[in-house]
Length: 109
Image 1 (cartoon, rainbow, N blue to C red):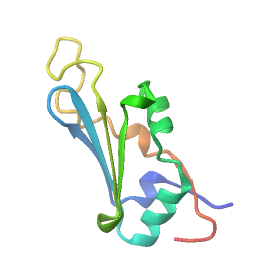
Image 2 (cartoon, rainbow, N blue to C red):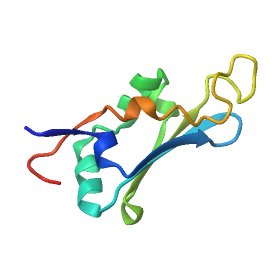
Image 3 (cartoon, rainbow, N blue to C red):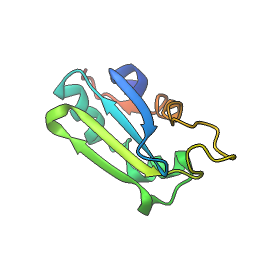
Image 4 (cartoon, helix red, strand yellow):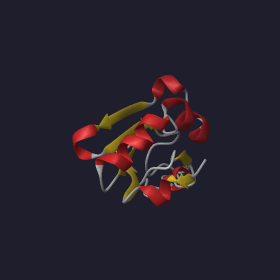
């Protein structure tokens, strides 16, 4: 089975603050077919995000936006943005672990 990383398939993967207490992630695709393959693979899931970021799965918000060919994920920050324990005040470097997620291609895209 052919595999591609999420970083190879997406045209944009970014993270940022959603206020001082939450991170939000956008994963966007060039076309519906690539988006559908990723969406239907189930690899980008609440459980996977919870495992990667050491969150409670119940705190993860994951929304598939079919018309925009995008997936949006949000969850609470461990530390408030700008607090003395915060290492990424803008949340802009949090997306990196998602790039290596392997997506089965089943001979498509």
